[in-house]
Image (cartoon, rainbow, N blue to C red; front, side, top):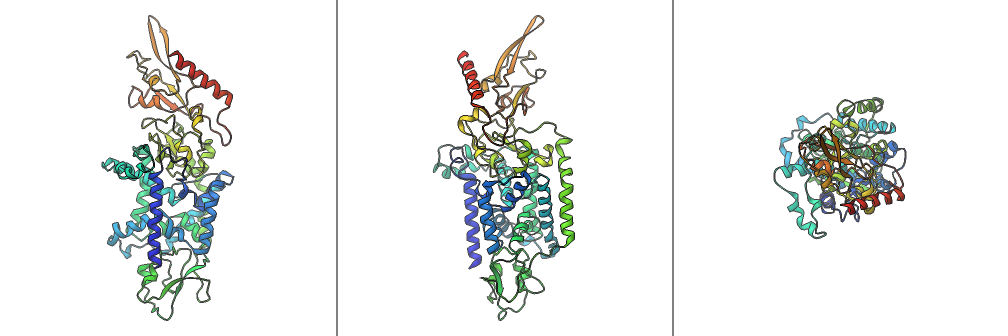
Length: 521
C-alpha cells in the first residue's frame, strides 16, 4: 500500500511540475502564479545561497522550513515521494535501462559517502562567497535539462511541444509565446548535456545512481533524517533473513547486508518496495521503538577533511577557469539582475528565466564564460532580442537573482549598450546605405550620422547611449550577418540590489527625448 501511494505521489508531483513549467510560463501568467515554487523548497539551496550572499534569502525560507521539518519527522520522503528528478530517474531505471543493469557492476557501498564529501565542499565553497549550481539542486537540474536539452532535442527532431501543450494553453490564454522551444547555443548546452548523461546513464550501474552517490541535496536531507518518526520495522516472526530486501529490492541500499533489521535512515527514501514481500515481514510504522535503532551514515574524519580541502581549493580553480583565458567579454544579464558579484552568489542556474523568454534571447553561459558562470543566463542577440514589453524572466527567479521589474519600468531598465564597429559596418564602409538597426530599434536610440571624408560623405548609425537599453534588436537584425557590426556590451548597465534602477527625473528626461525623436520622424 505504501509503495502504491508513493508511486501515485510521484506521478502527481511530476505532473504538477510539468504543468507549472510549461502550462503557465507565458507572459500573462508568470506574474500571477508561482511557477518557481518547486525551486524554492530545497533547504540546501536556501542554506548555500544565504551563506554565499551573506544574507538570508527570505523568499526561500518558508519552503525550506517545511521540507526540513517533514524530513526530520518522516525521513527522506522528499527524495522518494516529491522530487521530479527522482521520479524521472525511477522511470528511466525501470523502463529504459531495465535489465541492462547488472548487480555485478554495482559500485562499492562505500562510494555513497561521496555525496557527503561533495556536500561539505559546497558548504565550504559558499563560505567563500561562491556557489556551484552544476549539480547542487535536483529541481534546478531537471528544469535545466528540460529547458536546455530535451526541448531543443525535440525541436531538432521535429517533435514540437507547442502542439502537445496547445490545448492546455488555450484554457488559460490566447498567446503561444510560452510554448516555443528554445534554440540551442552549443557552448551553453554542453554543461546541461553532461549533467543529463551523469544523471541517467548511471542507471546502468545501479538504481538511483545519482541519488545514491552524487546528489548533495540527498546527503543534506540524509543528515536531517537520521532519527525519523516514520521508520522501517522488521517482523522477526516472519523474517527468515533471506536478504532479498537488502540485495535486490531496496533501490538505495539503505538496508544492512549484515543485519536486515537495521536500516540506514539517512539513505532510506521511504519508497516502500521492501514492504511488498510475500511474507509481510517489513512494515513502516510511526514511533521510535526499542528493538533496533536506525542506522546512520558512517563519516570518518578523512571525509570531512577531503570535503573541506575540496571547498578551499575549488575557488581558485573555478575563478581561474574559462573567462580568464578564453572569453574576455562579460555576459549581458537579464533585466532586473542584481550586481554581478551578488548575482553569482544567488543564481542556481535553473533555467527558469530562459524557459519563459518569448524570444529565447536568454541562453545559458557555457564553459567559455568560466565555471563560475556555468548555466547562468546571458543575452544572446543572435538568437533573439529582449522584448520591450516583456518582464517574464523577472517574475520567475526563485532566488531573486533577477529582481521583479514593473511593466512601465522595462523601457528604462538598462542591461547594456549597443556599440557600432565602424570598420565592419556596411554603411560606414560605404558599401550600401543601410540603417536596418535604426529601423528595428524599439527605443529610438539609433540615429543616422553623416561625416565628410574628403570628397565623399559617409553616413551610418550612431547610438545614443542614454536611450539605448541593450535589448539586442539591432544586433539581431544587423545586415553584416553572422558577425554583426553592432553588438551589445555591458557598458552602462544599471544593476542594483534594492530600490529603483533609475530615478523618476532621469526616466522623465529619457521619455521626453524619445518622444521628441518620434515626433521628428
